[in-house]
Image (tube, rainbow, N blue to C red):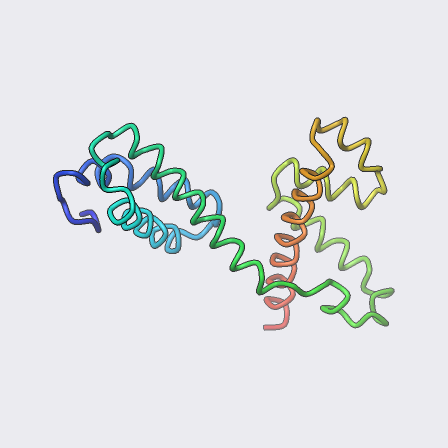
Length: 169
């Protein structure tokens, strides 16, 4: 049973798009419950802000996915501000020398959660590969690579913090 009222105009949304949009959002945030909540927000946004578009199913689909992407990215942005802690703040700097291998292992374990582009940029930074080489190799601008790097670092911080917190419990 759908969570949306079965009005004539939105019946198509709840039948055709709901599961697709939840899956789409979940690819960004990796949390099914939050993806379902964001999908509900997408539905409400369509109803409140775009009532005229609801008559064309093709337009509804395009707009719904655009709204879903923006809402998922906004969620990620808000969630990522909670993890503005550097690795040196996590571990006592004096103890890093003896725990450097542990930290390196943690980092490499968490690389699998990153996209291929994010992995390449992070590994490029680790191995001191100049940005110009990465620009040519990945066919991306310096700004794009810096954005990829920033997102990757935030993801890694989150994953490493989770791993460290799990180890303490």
